[in-house]
Image 1 (cartoon, rainbow, N blue to C red):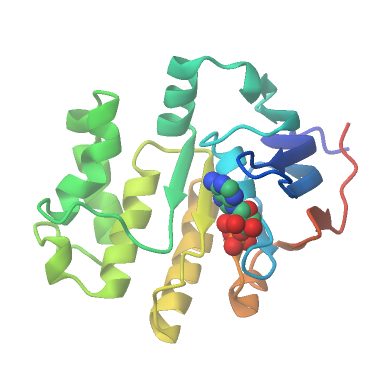
Image 2: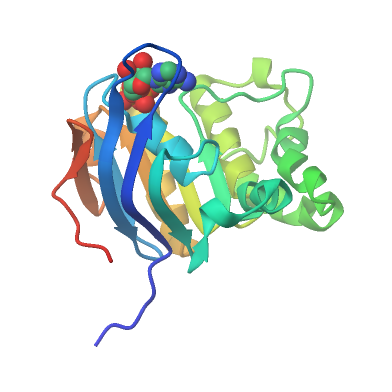
Length: 231
Ligand code: ADP
């Protein structure tokens, strides 16, 4: 019997953006359970609500209704300070564009999330090791403008991992990369996920990327298919 607890559960989650007279329901009852260490892709065409879903999971936004629990903790019950801590330490984010600070070196960029929680000094060795691991040992002191697209994105991955999150959220992580760099990034994400026992949730419209994850869910009409029974 497998008694491992889910890392994250969404139950009947809906999202309606206000502001227009008749706002559409972007998410219409999402049920999702992510287990520790698994990799899951969410696919669907542009505009179907993938980023909306990721923003809710990462507590960057709140659902209109439903519940979200992370390690048995009700995310929607956290106050602003607890949410900031959750985002800083439990979750790593990777986006289509790297969002590195242009005036900082690769090493400095990677340490920014650690600066936020006062652990930058302790994390320096980890930062260096991770950058070496992703093939950037010769680039620690380069600024983003001196790095290739793939190198910038790998730096962003290390930044996302610096605080040892249990969950890595990636929004079209290969969207700005050529085919070879995209494959390199997918290999890296899967390897790091395994090594760090980290759950990976990737939203993408690239089926070749999605197909390499452990599970593929399709977001269609505001629901995920196949549907999951969560309670
Ligand atoms: P995807 O990531 O699949 O491209 P999104 O989650 O970005 O889709 O968007 C889903 C739908 O929600 C779109 O119709 C989009 O216009 C709308 N939407 C996204 N963000 C907002 C917002 N902040 N305010 C109003 N509508 C939004």
